Image (cartoon, rainbow, N blue to C red; front, side):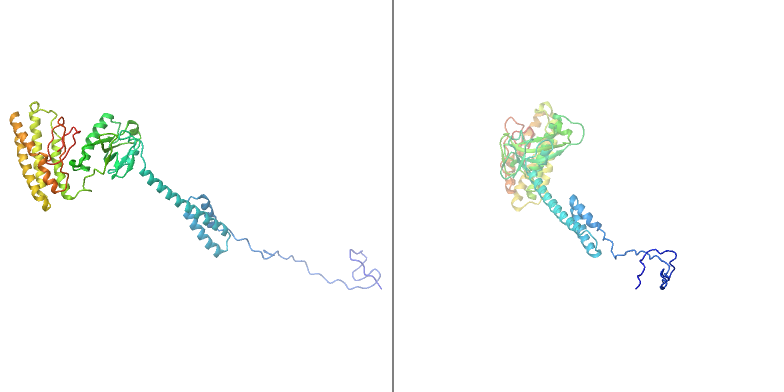
Length: 402
């Protein structure tokens, strides 16, 4: 038996095919030249990981920020569809974005509702300070614990049907510029508010005797902050007194016939308000003659308005009778305007006042369902008339109104 030589290096004398012991072995077969095998691109068959969906990321970010929840919600829904189709990652992000955007959207809706309720309540509670009080609009009635003297710092809007401290009947916006001063603002407010009074409470006879006109003007401090509004208010002559019911008598509360009649009374009232500063005719006969001419023209205008309107059957006769009285009064005032001396002026002047006695207009007013109790003037007040008989007035005013 022979033992095969161990594997390993051979001695030089060990020729191929021959054993040192002399035994013959087959020669090794020739090897093919070595050729390297190229390394495969993906030797294990692995796929690259799927990418993240960009819309899912954006949806999550917007949901966390709470800025634009609607956009975040839409992006999340779109992202879920793309992820299913493309096999992308980010489904959890998309769902998180949808959830967070939905929560933030609900929060925004709740916040908006709370703000709406807050502003509604704020509009009904007291408005204080310079410009805040001007949130009260025409027709608003309000209360003030401090009365009308303190209402500029606290004014609570209340229904006009019940008792209230005041009722806003007009506002005046002033032009920009330097502060005009307290006295100038008071004079402007006095003039403009009385003008607005006639448009809001057209029937002066319907105003209670204890009603007076108040106005709130900008202060020097509020002027610097942009306050340019004068607020005109009806209130009780007693600063702590109250009013009941709205005093509004205009086109929103009156019918067309009533409006025409009351507008005609304003024509003569405006002329009577322009009485000369001198109380005595002897001191200014030319001024009183000019005033008489204006009254005569106003009476002509008033009678023309009444004559041209088509009245209801019940009012036709009393209005026609009143027109006849106004025409006679017009003639008397025209003669006073042409008087050459004081005695002649007084003769026609007295006749003119007699013809515009308020009592003469009561039948027409009654037929039109207007107030029928003439206003009462104090003896020491400026002399006033009827309303041809037309308008009304209050004893506490310095102006003439009929």
